[in-house]
Length: 369
Image 1 (cartoon, rainbow, N blue to C red):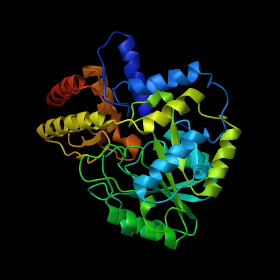
Image 2 (cartoon, rainbow, N blue to C red):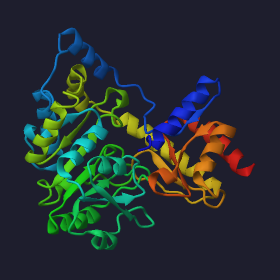
Image 3 (tube, helix red, strand yellow):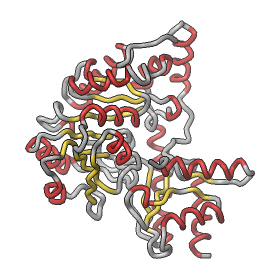
């Protein structure tokens, strides 16, 4: 198994920075904002008041209750704290979910372009990834989905808002996916870590479709929404039996998420981060404008903070293009091959506006040169 491609190119960029190069990183999905001060203060308060010991593997009851209450209110369903599992980031929640539901040889459907870690995590759980290409708007093609479901299919992974395309799946598509999941008795793992970052329309979750609460594992995190990537705090909302299995795995692996972070997360859940979304929206508009000027096809993100640029007209190999851009102009991006979209490049606008402007000046120079 190879390392995460996104982390690889982020590492290469950091290496050049240590050599004294001014590298602009448009690689990792990491907001450039600092964690809000009240959240930091909450963690400090927890530490100073002695909240530094082990917690239950599933998370502190207060945080599980807060998450269950928040999602019950937002989605009009009822979840109990026992269905909430607190994890070391969203990636950990996904891994636990797959380890809990997949047996050797089970198939898991993944829509492409897709985040780089879905396939390795499916394989780690003993499953077989089955890839389905989305349509020209990067939305799941229901007919293709119907044709790929077999007697060995166990789960479908959906990710909306999507990494790497920024696509947001409309409710009618989610409903059709749900109907197939119910018909074939499948789980759906719904990765919604970018649900707070929607610029066009509003977020819809498949878990809110009638009959889906008992077969959906919702994955979320405070990393993107609250600029808490390094804190490693995520969670899953799952059917009781799946949640119990996930907790057992935690008890034998990580034990628990670090305690002060859990207490800070309670306050984070009610903290208004709309100012971050407004800034990302401003950057999105600028990035789309600069991409249009390049004259190359690209996705137009309705959510998240990524765009997928088609470089097939100017490069034979997207990986080579990315590496040459990094070495010549010191702009770090990620090749689309990593996301099962060869010929494209993923650009993150989770960087300062100043860096984004300079990066696109360099990209224009690189393409024209």
